[in-house]
Length: 249
Image (cartoon, rainbow, N blue to C red; front, side):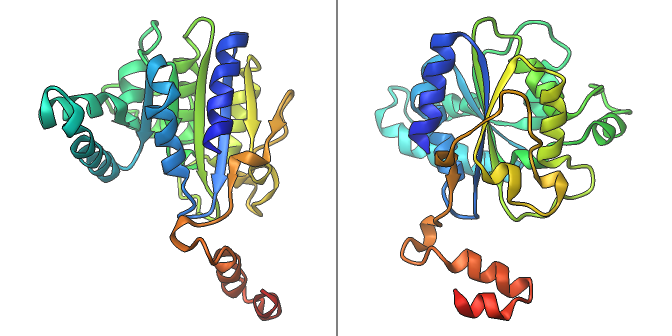
């Protein structure tokens, strides 16, 4: 999956286009790891950032990665922490800092963790009505416009958690589809599960002109139980009350 993501970076740069990837996977399959590989691998040279709406995850990732990098940083732990502040950012802060600007952000590669939790247009407008920075579109719409300011090429990687509830105000994959339909210059590449795995239409990416699928973008085996790849499917059938299917697994 990491190789498929990095191949898209190279193709986007070579062909000078804007590309967006939708990476799906069951919990614990390594989506976050693939995103970090992209940010700290090939994407780093182009300016890459890992965005998450979970503030606790921001602190944990920054500190863990800084401690790991401190041994080779000439400025030690302090210098490593400073570098991680730009590589791992809170999505709301990145969004608000860039939404009203006209110049592109420093980062050409943006990885969004749990991208299905991005706000719908109605929720974003209502939620920001009394805030310093007012939103006029969905979070997917704003993020596509922010990164799309780059001339030549740019890449967004959306990490999608399968089988998770969509809460009030969250637009799901459907909101990304709406935003992309209004911005046809973005080329979308998605794991097949992003189009047809969910029963809730909000959790499915609609068919878009030029949309390409790539099975390599789906992570099906949990890294926590490499020798038991059927555990997640068994749990799903039990929760659905399908005893026969669970017994078959």
